[in-house]
Amino acid sequence: MRALEHRPFRLYFFGQGVSILGSWIQQVALAWLVYRLTGSAALLGLVAFAALAPMLVVGPLAGAWIDRHDRRRLLMQVQVLLFIQAGVLAALTWFGLIGPALIIVMSLSLGVLNAFDTPLRQSLIPAMVGGREDLPNALALNAMLFNLGRFVGPPIAGLMLGFMSEAACFLLNAFSYMALLWGVAAMRLATNVKAGGSVAQVFREGVRYALDTWPIRTLLIVLALLNVTASAYAVLLPVFAREVFNGDARTLGLLWGAAGCGAFVATLMLATRKSVRGSLNLAISCVVLAALALLIFPLATRLAIALPALAALGFGISGANVGINTVMQTIAPDRLRGRIVSFFSSIRFGLDAVGGLIAGGIAALSSAPATLLGESAILLALCVWLLLRAGRLRQSVKC
Image (tube, rainbow, N blue to C red):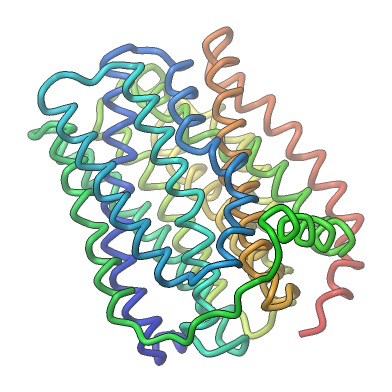
């Protein structure tokens, strides 16, 4: 927990913890609302795609915009807009005005805001901890927050949905953004050095660096295939909860919580890594674990088997993603950090959206278990490709 010795990071850590908890409660409530209103697996995939697709389209350009402006001030403005978005969603749901079309519109607006929010937060973390020495630990703790919320939030959402409406979950999330806004406002950080040139010029510089740097290019390929396949399981969890395990919103909360538990443990392990190379080794192992867990989970017919499999899947996906992010941020120079983080975020969440859309469409035509089995085969092939390059990757990491 050494990164918490820095006051700005402590303020961020506790504010972000409240915000993430609210976000996970909203995500579960929104998925349940969609499935309750329509019963459509395809629409679940479409809504997930709408929430994450802007990361793929807007995210890379957002990184160039971020590197040209004051990151702290931009982050505060984004938190206010996120508060407004969640409040509007709560009002529409409370008054019974929400429907599939409006849900997609609200998900798109959330996705656009998150395309700025995610790289903004992560690109500010080095300034919060005073440089690179505590950066791996800070990134792991940041991911730990995300996964702790993922572990705690869904079961809370399941309980709330048992005696309250989805609108209450959305309203709770709206006010959770104020915690991070307060934390960022209370920080005292030096203004970041702003990149010169137009957004297009700054963007092209970042793309050239990512493509010409072999370790970053290789890790981005792994990141893309991992998230377009393994991460798509989340879209289909409502289908598994109701049709495979004959459950309700509480079952969905348990499934989501099991994956979050595994992801949380992975980030705890990453926080103890003493070198960037240790983070890389764990990331490679986690890709293999995710492939095996994605093969086992859709074959399970009982929760006693499904929950451990989901925990392993959450561990694998989170450990790989956070490990890759740590290595990339360590390799990248400070002046390119916003762009490299935005490339990571856009691929991590954007291709997660594409994978969710594909998974929802295939599941509507066949079944949810068959869809995940097919994706596990693709991920196993990626593991072979990655293991053949693991030695060169380790040599490229100096610390």
